[in-house]
Length: 451
Length: 127
Image 1 (tube, rainbow over the protein chains, first blue to last red):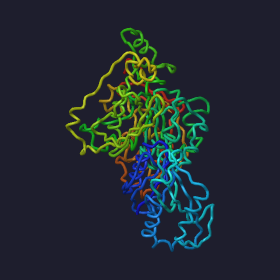
Image 2: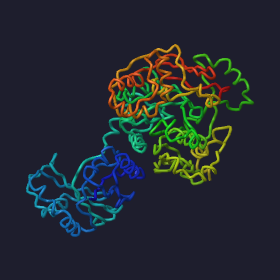
Image 3: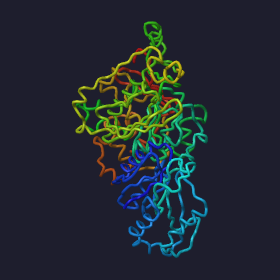
Image 4: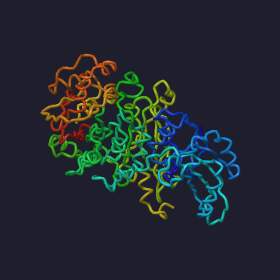
């Protein structure tokens, strides 16, 4: 059976990857029959109506799913297809209450036109009462119009679909977790909608363990908790996690009733991590020992506002007093360890290395990185022999873009050992933030300067 | 810091990673708090697959809990023995260290725990 998933026409490059991840999560075999970034209609073949409902019930970007009763480029053809494919089902809906609706994408119809379109379905012969609110069954005629159809006076849509409504996605979830209503946020908190999409890409679910090593105020941990996973978080800045008064990361979990899902938080630097791990592919890596997490998700500092830093001393020759001072004072409770600037490319490598060591087989790594609209300053998708890229989606802003990249941890048996031998670690030891972060330099340089 | 989380953590000093003594960290002057959390058998079974059982036995004894059996329970044992499941749930999920220190047996470094949050940041001479 084919189904029509009516997607939101926003975050276009995230939509299909999200649905595909949900198919993996629910163990549903899904075949994509038709999809375009330009329209909100995704046609898929699925094993059953139950599978269709399970598939989108957690989707943030899918609005609803329908049994596809027909698809055609003209109305006459549509009605012919609907008759041919579904006539044997009509008696099921003969007496129940029902409603017909019209969904015009990128187009518009007058009231009279809509009435005419609906009446053309009279051959269905449904005899039950028409109920506009909460009918037993709802059928929708979808119209896919060309871009700018209205100003260009295009008379007909490119395509029609007709479907029977089955159920909806989770587009109301972002409102529940809206940052505007959250007790504790900061300038780096990711919005609820994309946090939830990221949690879907990381396959967060009840019974699973997930970790965010750049937790900040906890946007990703909150999204994972919404989907019932047990989540751990850490950040190099203890103040972010501890917060103040009742405005804390833990306080956010209390606000939503998610405390049972909070595994724990701690202050740590990913490049000096206290997490136990076995180097991927080493003798100790038997596929189980030291594999702690089902998923790792994060939004690492891009180096722009947060200033990407790790533990260490900047200019140790120049600041020669720092290390002896540290030896003297580090046991004091208020000691703040020094930090040094660090390259975005290096932290990405560290994240991949960490994920390869600590993810279970087929575990997911999902993180956000900046790109730049200018091709010269592109941050390429990082690679690692033990991690296979699952999806890359892009969110575009005016001056810059950022990407959500998702990987899965390959079982050792599937790893390309030749690639492993060739893998070289990039070592970048730059001095100032601009040198280390080509992205930052791009963002803050005016267009004329760049040209 | 839940006992479960403690089971995932070693000394952060890179030089200690090669020594078996850096794991588990040893709680000292620890203040414990018992939460009340609804038991989730599926989660617990999954969690126990990730737990280092030998280290858990050490931690459990150090915190004053009755000794755990030498062998980690199998999935079947967990599914049939409700008392065992409850005890492990109580230890791993409901027992929290709110204040105290976590000490590395190899280098002696002490990580402070304040309000349940442990601090693993290192001074520059240890990085």
